[in-house]
Image (tube, rainbow, N blue to C red):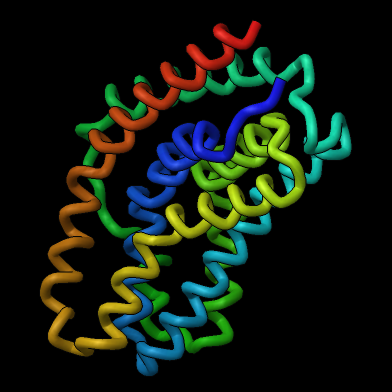
Length: 222
């Protein structure tokens, strides 16, 4: 049994949106625009962020490929989806019940406004790997892609789409700044503040809805 690319993307895009809406995705990208060399530094961060997300996801696709290959759906795929779906629901409920905790930008984040392009690139790679939320979403996406029976072309296309959506919250402010420059300073600062205040509720809702979708798909595939 295999899945179509379109069907698989309906599962992958919500996973990517969890990364997209995370403050540790949006805020560092905005802070790069307040460095001494905002344009090259922000672009370097964006490239590193996309490579980090795409590389992590590709790694889990490769793991799935090593287990069963990309051209057919393995027998364990439905059970994996059930586990991932349940984990997403639990994580979403945890984020909901802890949504009222005070949010602020950590000192180590704000200190990044003094870095240059080289450090920004490395920082983006490190943030992608050490952030548990990003790591889990990339793992879930990679294993879902690798166990969907899409074939090599479909699998890597799905990885590219997932990465593009996940990195969009960094890409859009950076690209807008390249066009409009300092005129976007105030709106981007307001966006950063709003993300700090509201992200927990948004992410909780997405995680629970996505978890139910993945759980249903897993049970349906048994």
